[in-house]
Image 1 (spheres, rainbow, N blue to C red):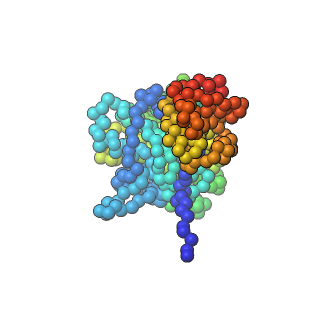
Image 2: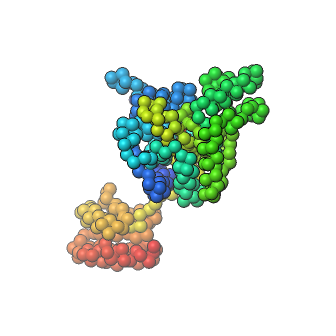
Image 3: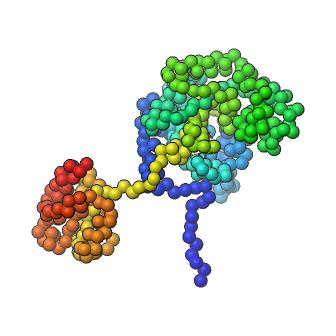
Length: 424
Ligand code: HAM
C-alpha cells in the first residue's frame, strides 16, 4: 500500500510558531499603539483584489506586476490577484468609500499577509507580512517628515539602534521623464556593458537601473547624470523642506541618489530603512509619496504618502531561540471520575486570571501524573481525587518547595492566586 502523503507548507510560505508568533503579535501591538498616538485608524482590506488594481496602481513595468503576482481566474472568469502590497488596496478603499468627503488627510494603518512569487531566500518569502500606514490628502512636505518621525518612534520602541534611513526624491513625472531621457542618452552608447536585466530596463524603466546590485554596472553609473539635477523647482523645494524638518526633529538620514524604489507609483519623497544585520535583503521597510496614484485609479488628484515594514524581517532582527511559555499551574485529576473536577477548577483559576492548563486527556495514576507534571516545567500543580472531592477540597503543591496543602474548594482560585504572588 502506498504511504500516505505528509503535507508541508507551500514553498516560500511558513508556519509561525511559539516565540515567533508571539513576537509577531507583540510587534503588531506596539505598532497599533504607536500609530494611534498619531491619529491613525486601522483599515483591513481583503486579501484578494481585481488584478487590474495592481496593474494600474503598481504599474505594468514593475517586477511585482511583471513577474511576482499570484493571479488566477475565479469560476466566472474574473481575473483576481492575491494582494502583493497594500497601497493600491488602500487607494481603492479611499475611492470606494468616498473618503475624500472625510476630514483630510485620511490616516490609516494596516497589517497582514501579502503575496509575491519571488525566489525564496533568507528574509524573503512568498507569503510575507507587512505593517504599513498611509496618509492620503496632504501634499506635504511636513507630513512626510511626521510620517518618518512616527516610523522611527515605533522602531525605537523595539530598541533598534543600528538603522539607516535612506532618503531621496524621484520628483514629479515630468522630472522623471526628463531624467530617464538623460540616463538613456548616457547608457545607450554603453549598452554592451549592461547585463540582460538592465538592457531590458533601458527600454521599459531606465530609473530602475539605478538600484542595480551588479558591481560593474554600479561603476558605470558613477559617471551617470544625477536624478537630483533633473528635479523641477517644486520637487526640489519639497525635498528641501522634508530634509530640513527631519533635521529639526533630530532624525538622522542619508540622501541616497540611487534610491528609486521598485513600484511605479512613487513621486517626490522616497525612503527605505535598512539594518546592516540583515545582509543582502536588508531593507526592513520602504515607502514614499504617490501623488498620482489615486488619479491613476480614476479618482481626483489626491496626494498620498506611506510606508510598509517587512514584518518578517523586523521580527527576525528581534529573534533569539524558541521557547515554550509554560503556564504556572497544572491541574491534575487523580482517577477518571475527577476529570470534571479538574475541568471546573481550571476554569475557576482562569476566572481569577491565573494561567492554567488541565490534564484532561486520560486519567493517570497519581505517580504517573506527578512525573509528567514534574517534567512539564510548572511552578504549581493542583490535584483533585476522590478523597478531595469527598472533603470539598483540592491539593495545591509547590514544585519549588515540594510543600503541599489541602485548600477548600470554596474560594480555591483566590487562595491559589494569593500563594502565587511571592513567586512573581
Ligand atoms: P515594498 O518595498 O515593495 O513597498 O515592500 C515593503 C517592505 O516589505 C520591504 O522593505 C520588505 O521589508 C518587505 N518585503 C517585500 N517583499 C518581501 C518578501 N517577498 N518577503 C519578505 N519581506 C518582503 C511596498 O510594498 C509599498 N506598498 C510601501 C508603501 C506604502 N509605499 C507607500 N505606502
